[in-house]
Structures are given as C-alpha cells and as structure tokens.
Amino acid sequence: MKSYKYMHQNGIKVMRISGAFWTFLLVIALSILILLNELKFHFINTKNLIIGAIILTTIVCILFMIIVPWFKFKHLRYFLDDKEIHIRGIIFIDVHVIPYFRIQNIDIVEGFIMRKFQLASLSLSTAGGNSEIALIDIQEAQRLKKQIKQQKSITTNVTSLEKLNDDI
Image 1 (cartoon, rainbow, N blue to C red):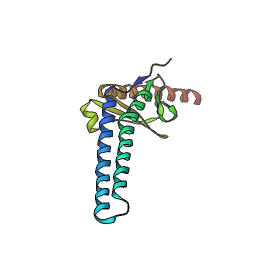
Image 2 (cartoon, rainbow, N blue to C red; image 1 turned 30 degrees about the vertical axis):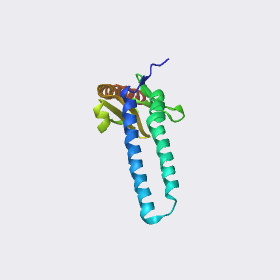
Image 3 (cartoon, one colour; image 1 turned 180 degrees about the vertical axis):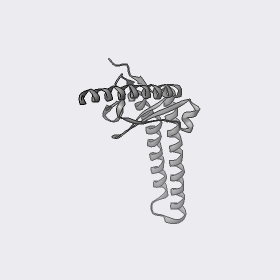
Image 4 (cartoon, helix red, strand yellow; image 1 turned 135 degrees about the vertical axis):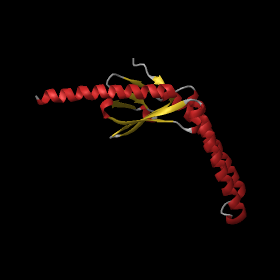
C-alpha cells in the first residue's frame, strides 16, 4: 500500500475560517437585498425574504464550515514516487498521476489565513492543467518543491539519455 500524506491538521481550521468569511459576506449581501426590497423594490414579501435568507445562510454555513472541510481533510492526499506524483482529489475520488518531466511550473501559494497557521498549497502546472497539494505545512511545501525539482532534473536527464541512445 502506498503511504499517502494528508493535509495538515490546521487545514480544517483554515477552511472553516474561510467558510465563515464567505458566510459573513453572504449575510451582508442578503442584508442589502432585504433592505433594498423593503425600501424601494417590494418584489417579494420581506418576511419570506428574511426566512429564505436565514435558510440559505444556515445551509451555506453548514456546508462550508462543517461538511466541506471534513470531506476535504478525509479525501485529499498525495504521495511522491521516484517517477511521478500521485494526488488524490475529492471529486469522484480521482487520482491525478503527474510524471515529473511533465511539470512546467511549481508554485507555493500562501493565503492570508494560511500564513497565520504556517500552511501553504503547492501548485503544479503542466500542459494539461494544474493540480494542487492543498494546506500542507510551509516547510513541507518548500521541501516538496525542492524534491520535485531534483526529481524532475533527474527524470529529464534520463529521458534525454534514452532518446539519445534510441537515435544512435
């Protein structure tokens, strides 16, 4: 069995704080909508609009502060092989297998909230798209970036030698 690594424990906290922030923005937007409806537009009964806003806010809060963080923490994982990276996603529990020689760019992404918890995400760009190892320790992200670059140079050199031998 392959030893997958998971996101950092603090990743759940970061996702919950982010969910709370987006829920707060939703509450502000819905409050403005209710205020505009009451003062100017009168397109729906204010009582029904308030009930709908409370229901929507509750659903969004439960979804983005409880369900999504737990689901991502349980299912997002990765491991590095000597020839490729395996990243297990959450949509249909798909596995992205990225050979090192296909990687074009490696970025470490730190958000404001992530920085407070010493977390980062490692973004891997290929010609086919981007993959991300989300919410890992910042030192782990830097170590992985260095390791991937080393493996990429080794793999590229081996591939170049194989092509040279095939041409001869």
